[in-house]
Length: 274
Image (cartoon, rainbow, N blue to C red; front, side, top):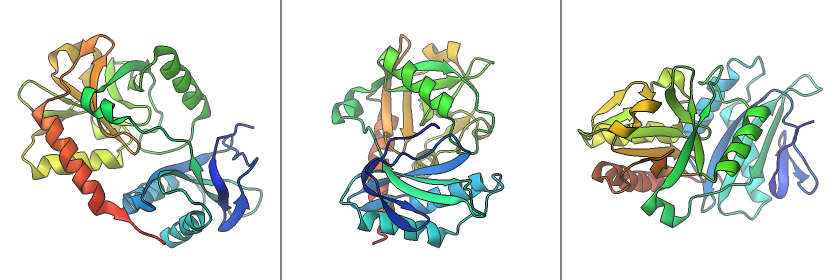
Protein backbone atom coordinates (compact mmCIF):
# COMPACT_ATOMS: atom_id res chain seq x y z
CA UNK A 1 0.00 0.00 0.00
CA UNK A 2 1.32 3.42 -0.98
CA UNK A 3 0.44 6.17 1.45
CA UNK A 4 0.54 9.94 1.57
CA UNK A 5 1.43 12.34 4.33
CA UNK A 6 -1.23 14.51 5.90
CA UNK A 7 -1.38 17.50 8.24
CA UNK A 8 -3.96 18.69 10.73
CA UNK A 9 -5.84 17.03 13.58
CA UNK A 10 -8.82 15.77 11.61
CA UNK A 11 -9.44 14.27 8.16
CA UNK A 12 -12.89 14.03 6.60
CA UNK A 13 -14.01 10.74 5.04
CA UNK A 14 -17.40 10.70 3.33
CA UNK A 15 -18.57 13.63 5.39
CA UNK A 16 -17.40 12.24 8.72
CA UNK A 17 -14.49 13.70 10.74
CA UNK A 18 -11.81 11.18 11.74
CA UNK A 19 -8.66 11.40 13.86
CA UNK A 20 -5.70 12.29 11.66
CA UNK A 21 -3.05 10.91 14.02
CA UNK A 22 -1.59 7.81 12.44
CA UNK A 23 -3.98 8.01 9.49
CA UNK A 24 -2.36 7.30 6.14
CA UNK A 25 -4.48 7.62 3.02
CA UNK A 26 -4.05 4.82 0.51
CA UNK A 27 -2.78 6.20 -2.78
CA UNK A 28 -2.20 2.83 -4.41
CA UNK A 29 -5.77 2.69 -5.71
CA UNK A 30 -7.03 4.80 -8.61
CA UNK A 31 -7.19 8.26 -7.06
CA UNK A 32 -8.64 11.30 -8.79
CA UNK A 33 -7.85 14.48 -6.93
CA UNK A 34 -7.58 18.25 -6.69
CA UNK A 35 -5.44 20.37 -4.40
CA UNK A 36 -6.91 23.68 -3.26
CA UNK A 37 -5.10 26.44 -1.42
CA UNK A 38 -6.31 27.94 1.85
CA UNK A 39 -5.47 31.60 2.51
CA UNK A 40 -6.76 33.27 5.69
CA UNK A 41 -9.32 30.44 6.07
CA UNK A 42 -10.65 31.11 2.56
CA UNK A 43 -10.26 28.81 -0.45
CA UNK A 44 -8.68 30.12 -3.64
CA UNK A 45 -10.29 29.46 -7.05
CA UNK A 46 -12.69 26.92 -5.52
CA UNK A 47 -15.23 26.96 -8.37
CA UNK A 48 -12.47 26.36 -10.91
CA UNK A 49 -11.10 23.42 -8.95
CA UNK A 50 -14.54 21.85 -8.65
CA UNK A 51 -15.09 22.18 -12.40
CA UNK A 52 -11.75 20.54 -13.21
CA UNK A 53 -12.39 17.80 -10.64
CA UNK A 54 -15.69 17.04 -12.35
CA UNK A 55 -13.89 16.81 -15.71
CA UNK A 56 -11.33 14.34 -14.33
CA UNK A 57 -14.06 12.22 -12.74
CA UNK A 58 -16.04 12.09 -16.00
CA UNK A 59 -13.62 9.43 -17.29
CA UNK A 60 -13.18 7.60 -14.00
CA UNK A 61 -16.30 5.45 -14.01
CA UNK A 62 -16.88 6.58 -10.42
CA UNK A 63 -20.11 8.14 -9.21
CA UNK A 64 -19.39 11.85 -8.99
CA UNK A 65 -20.36 13.74 -5.83
CA UNK A 66 -22.02 17.07 -6.40
CA UNK A 67 -20.26 20.36 -5.71
CA UNK A 68 -22.39 20.93 -2.60
CA UNK A 69 -21.26 17.59 -1.14
CA UNK A 70 -17.59 18.43 -1.70
CA UNK A 71 -18.01 21.93 -0.25
CA UNK A 72 -19.71 20.48 2.83
CA UNK A 73 -16.79 18.08 3.34
CA UNK A 74 -14.37 21.00 3.08
CA UNK A 75 -16.44 23.01 5.55
CA UNK A 76 -16.32 20.13 8.05
CA UNK A 77 -12.56 19.90 7.57
CA UNK A 78 -12.10 23.58 8.36
CA UNK A 79 -14.40 23.42 11.38
CA UNK A 80 -12.27 20.69 12.92
CA UNK A 81 -8.82 22.11 12.12
CA UNK A 82 -7.19 25.39 13.11
CA UNK A 83 -5.10 25.88 9.96
CA UNK A 84 -5.42 29.34 8.41
CA UNK A 85 -3.16 28.62 5.41
CA UNK A 86 -2.18 25.46 3.59
CA UNK A 87 -3.06 23.01 0.84
CA UNK A 88 -6.04 20.66 0.96
CA UNK A 89 -6.28 17.52 -1.13
CA UNK A 90 -9.73 16.41 -2.28
CA UNK A 91 -9.74 12.74 -3.38
CA UNK A 92 -12.25 10.37 -4.84
CA UNK A 93 -11.32 6.69 -5.08
CA UNK A 94 -12.83 3.23 -5.20
CA UNK A 95 -13.93 1.68 -1.93
CA UNK A 96 -15.13 -1.70 -0.76
CA UNK A 97 -18.68 -0.41 -0.79
CA UNK A 98 -20.91 0.52 -3.68
CA UNK A 99 -20.02 4.20 -3.60
CA UNK A 100 -16.50 5.63 -3.85
CA UNK A 101 -14.78 7.28 -0.91
CA UNK A 102 -14.53 11.06 -0.79
CA UNK A 103 -11.62 12.29 1.33
CA UNK A 104 -10.49 15.79 2.29
CA UNK A 105 -7.33 16.47 4.28
CA UNK A 106 -4.45 18.90 4.67
CA UNK A 107 -1.20 17.96 2.92
CA UNK A 108 2.36 19.25 3.34
CA UNK A 109 3.12 22.28 1.21
CA UNK A 110 6.08 24.41 0.26
CA UNK A 111 5.45 27.99 -0.78
CA UNK A 112 8.31 29.97 -2.35
CA UNK A 113 10.20 32.34 -0.10
CA UNK A 114 9.73 36.02 -0.87
CA UNK A 115 13.27 36.29 -2.21
CA UNK A 116 12.41 33.73 -4.90
CA UNK A 117 9.79 36.08 -6.34
CA UNK A 118 12.55 38.68 -6.69
CA UNK A 119 15.48 36.56 -7.87
CA UNK A 120 13.70 33.60 -9.47
CA UNK A 121 14.19 29.84 -9.13
CA UNK A 122 16.20 27.18 -10.91
CA UNK A 123 14.66 24.32 -12.92
CA UNK A 124 15.83 21.23 -14.78
CA UNK A 125 14.14 19.11 -17.43
CA UNK A 126 12.76 15.64 -16.83
CA UNK A 127 11.82 13.16 -19.58
CA UNK A 128 8.16 12.29 -19.16
CA UNK A 129 4.92 12.45 -21.12
CA UNK A 130 1.60 12.18 -19.30
CA UNK A 131 -0.66 9.52 -20.87
CA UNK A 132 -3.72 11.73 -20.37
CA UNK A 133 -2.50 15.25 -19.51
CA UNK A 134 -5.97 16.77 -19.17
CA UNK A 135 -6.92 14.46 -16.26
CA UNK A 136 -5.66 14.96 -12.72
CA UNK A 137 -5.00 11.42 -11.46
CA UNK A 138 -2.46 10.37 -8.84
CA UNK A 139 0.66 8.58 -10.14
CA UNK A 140 2.81 7.37 -7.23
CA UNK A 141 5.84 6.21 -9.23
CA UNK A 142 5.96 9.50 -11.15
CA UNK A 143 5.63 11.58 -7.99
CA UNK A 144 8.34 9.65 -6.17
CA UNK A 145 10.72 9.77 -9.14
CA UNK A 146 10.22 13.51 -9.60
CA UNK A 147 10.77 14.15 -5.88
CA UNK A 148 14.13 12.36 -6.04
CA UNK A 149 15.09 14.27 -9.20
CA UNK A 150 14.27 17.62 -7.59
CA UNK A 151 16.18 16.71 -4.45
CA UNK A 152 19.22 15.37 -6.28
CA UNK A 153 19.51 18.47 -8.47
CA UNK A 154 18.67 20.98 -5.74
CA UNK A 155 16.04 22.77 -7.85
CA UNK A 156 12.55 24.10 -7.20
CA UNK A 157 10.73 22.19 -9.94
CA UNK A 158 11.23 20.04 -13.04
CA UNK A 159 9.95 20.73 -16.54
CA UNK A 160 8.58 17.72 -18.38
CA UNK A 161 10.04 17.12 -21.82
CA UNK A 162 8.56 14.73 -24.37
CA UNK A 163 10.19 12.45 -26.94
CA UNK A 164 10.17 15.30 -29.51
CA UNK A 165 12.28 17.48 -27.23
CA UNK A 166 9.34 19.75 -26.41
CA UNK A 167 8.94 21.28 -22.96
CA UNK A 168 5.32 20.81 -21.95
CA UNK A 169 4.75 21.69 -18.29
CA UNK A 170 6.12 21.38 -14.78
CA UNK A 171 5.43 18.38 -12.58
CA UNK A 172 3.12 20.57 -10.46
CA UNK A 173 2.94 23.73 -12.54
CA UNK A 174 2.50 25.27 -15.97
CA UNK A 175 5.34 27.04 -17.72
CA UNK A 176 5.44 30.21 -19.82
CA UNK A 177 8.12 31.99 -21.82
CA UNK A 178 8.48 35.53 -23.14
CA UNK A 179 10.25 36.10 -26.43
CA UNK A 180 12.28 39.05 -27.70
CA UNK A 181 9.16 40.86 -28.91
CA UNK A 182 7.41 40.63 -25.48
CA UNK A 183 5.00 37.92 -26.63
CA UNK A 184 3.98 35.27 -24.12
CA UNK A 185 4.55 31.70 -25.29
CA UNK A 186 2.63 28.79 -23.77
CA UNK A 187 2.86 25.10 -24.70
CA UNK A 188 -0.36 23.93 -26.41
CA UNK A 189 -3.23 23.14 -24.07
CA UNK A 190 -3.72 19.70 -25.62
CA UNK A 191 -0.30 18.66 -24.30
CA UNK A 192 -0.71 19.79 -20.68
CA UNK A 193 -2.92 19.78 -17.62
CA UNK A 194 -4.73 23.12 -18.05
CA UNK A 195 -3.82 24.73 -14.76
CA UNK A 196 -6.22 27.06 -13.01
CA UNK A 197 -3.49 29.61 -12.34
CA UNK A 198 -2.58 29.31 -16.03
CA UNK A 199 -6.16 30.19 -16.93
CA UNK A 200 -5.91 33.42 -14.98
CA UNK A 201 -2.48 34.28 -16.39
CA UNK A 202 -4.02 34.07 -19.87
CA UNK A 203 -6.97 36.18 -18.69
CA UNK A 204 -4.58 38.83 -17.38
CA UNK A 205 -2.76 38.85 -20.72
CA UNK A 206 -6.04 39.32 -22.61
CA UNK A 207 -7.07 42.20 -20.34
CA UNK A 208 -3.70 43.94 -20.64
CA UNK A 209 -2.98 43.61 -24.34
CA UNK A 210 -0.22 41.02 -23.96
CA UNK A 211 -0.03 38.82 -27.05
CA UNK A 212 -0.11 35.08 -26.37
CA UNK A 213 1.11 32.35 -28.70
CA UNK A 214 0.38 28.68 -28.02
CA UNK A 215 3.07 26.54 -29.60
CA UNK A 216 5.56 23.81 -28.68
CA UNK A 217 8.78 25.04 -27.05
CA UNK A 218 11.88 23.01 -27.86
CA UNK A 219 14.64 22.46 -25.31
CA UNK A 220 17.27 23.66 -27.80
CA UNK A 221 15.56 27.04 -28.35
CA UNK A 222 15.65 28.18 -24.74
CA UNK A 223 18.63 30.41 -25.46
CA UNK A 224 16.49 32.45 -27.86
CA UNK A 225 13.87 33.24 -25.22
CA UNK A 226 14.16 36.16 -22.83
CA UNK A 227 12.04 35.25 -19.83
CA UNK A 228 10.48 32.20 -18.16
CA UNK A 229 8.06 31.69 -15.29
CA UNK A 230 5.83 29.00 -13.83
CA UNK A 231 2.34 29.17 -12.37
CA UNK A 232 0.48 26.93 -9.97
CA UNK A 233 -1.46 26.55 -6.74
CA UNK A 234 1.60 26.82 -4.49
CA UNK A 235 4.02 29.00 -6.50
CA UNK A 236 1.37 31.45 -7.86
CA UNK A 237 3.38 33.25 -10.58
CA UNK A 238 7.06 32.55 -9.99
CA UNK A 239 10.03 33.80 -12.08
CA UNK A 240 12.66 31.36 -13.34
CA UNK A 241 16.24 32.55 -13.57
CA UNK A 242 17.88 29.41 -14.96
CA UNK A 243 17.11 26.15 -16.73
CA UNK A 244 20.17 23.89 -17.02
CA UNK A 245 22.61 26.71 -17.68
CA UNK A 246 20.30 28.93 -19.74
CA UNK A 247 19.56 32.13 -17.85
CA UNK A 248 16.49 34.36 -18.08
CA UNK A 249 15.48 37.87 -17.04
CA UNK A 250 13.53 37.98 -13.78
CA UNK A 251 12.85 41.73 -13.96
CA UNK A 252 11.05 41.67 -17.30
CA UNK A 253 8.24 44.28 -17.28
CA UNK A 254 5.68 41.90 -18.82
CA UNK A 255 6.40 39.29 -16.15
CA UNK A 256 6.23 41.85 -13.35
CA UNK A 257 2.90 43.17 -14.64
CA UNK A 258 1.45 39.65 -14.70
CA UNK A 259 2.72 38.98 -11.17
CA UNK A 260 1.19 42.22 -9.87
CA UNK A 261 -2.17 41.59 -11.53
CA UNK A 262 -2.24 37.97 -10.36
CA UNK A 263 -1.74 38.97 -6.72
CA UNK A 264 -4.64 41.42 -7.00
CA UNK A 265 -6.81 38.79 -8.67
CA UNK A 266 -6.21 36.35 -5.81
CA UNK A 267 -7.93 38.66 -3.34
CA UNK A 268 -11.00 38.83 -5.58
CA UNK A 269 -11.23 35.05 -5.91
CA UNK A 270 -10.96 33.87 -2.29
CA UNK A 271 -14.16 32.11 -1.22
CA UNK A 272 -15.45 31.74 2.32
CA UNK A 273 -17.26 28.45 3.02
CA UNK A 274 -17.61 28.71 6.81
